[in-house]
Length: 272
Image 1 (cartoon, rainbow, N blue to C red):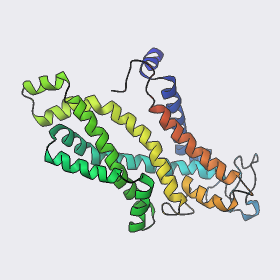
Image 2 (cartoon, rainbow, N blue to C red; image 1 turned 30 degrees about the horizontal axis):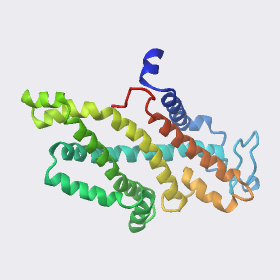
Image 3 (cartoon, helix red, strand yellow; image 1 turned 60 degrees about the vertical axis):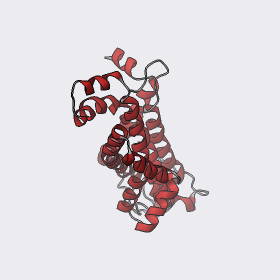
Image 4 (tube, one colour; image 1 turned 180 degrees about the vertical axis):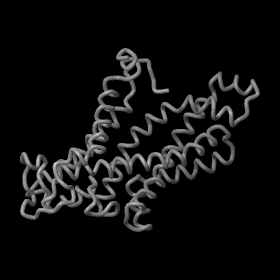
């Protein structure tokens, strides 16, 4: 078993999986692991530095930062996974069809993709949320609208490359329909790199989520969400740095884990 894992995954991939799975498990077990109620206010303990009772200290309302970070995994990571899933559901058929069929529809769709990618993700997301109005669901919709183009372009490029393979030509000569070729030959061949791309994109989505909430346009207080915690901490960073350091480290750790999962092996093996 260990030999199979070592051949398939690099040390960086394994380290990334351990980080991400560990974070997810902490979120799932938050009710049992959290030392305090994440919403419980104790003004007398506000901005308390890290202690045995409060390992990560308390925020401006005396709430346990560690507990809020644990429950924040449920909000931030679950939302990121939901966004990635929705984006894949929308982008997968578009990328498969445009890459396989090409023609006028492909040209039109790629011009839409180019237009979407012309602006930085954060700016376009802020603009869409500004139009729709601040809120959790509007934030999700805005990020899906922004991220779909990246998935379509990536999937289309994989399909274009795969259609040149000999086994696809053989499948066509054998009389397989276009739908059967897409389903039984092309999709299984490109599934692995799409999953790796999705793992990497989870980190980007978490950064977007946290950035939007940090600006006050996404999840709203008192929701235990990493971006919201950063937003609440800005006024107290100089007198109590821990209120911003620990949420920032949580975001950085998760993004690092996603980055490590998506690393390719430094050998002849590739993620295809």
